[in-house]
Image (tube, rainbow over all chains, first blue to last red):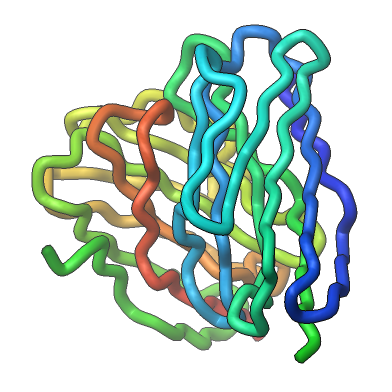
Length: 112
Length: 114
């Protein structure tokens, strides 16, 4: 069945430290893995995505890695800032469909 | 580009009443998705459309829920009759080429059923 597990559920870091959020998926046909950031009371917004033909992608302080063999992917945020505080969701496409299955979210708090 | 537009932003209604949520996707996006977000269940896909045609409604919780997309620029999600357990934030999202392309979410409708 379709399942995306996300860990940890909460993460607290000091400003300037790095944060890592990990997700695993079960569908071996998944080929698209986006990450969304949702600030309190706001809508989820895409921050980075990766496709199955790429192992790593970076955009300034944000990077995503994908291990298709192990069926897991991770979000890395370096030099965290207080404005990075939000809930982060990973997602994986469901096989050969147009559906995205979301993880349960990680609440990141960055303390100044 | 105004983004995905949802209305209303907030809806408070009494149990048993009909609720209609509205969505205008981004122009040129062929896919429209309705999600429900709760603390307990996270983001759940309810239904999605491709070129105004419902493709997968397996996430619709029960017959009280229905969705339509009469044209490329408008969709509705209706709950009739509403129940307290329907209280959640309902998001509409659109994408250009389906689930393998970025989803653009609207600001959501916060529904409270008393």
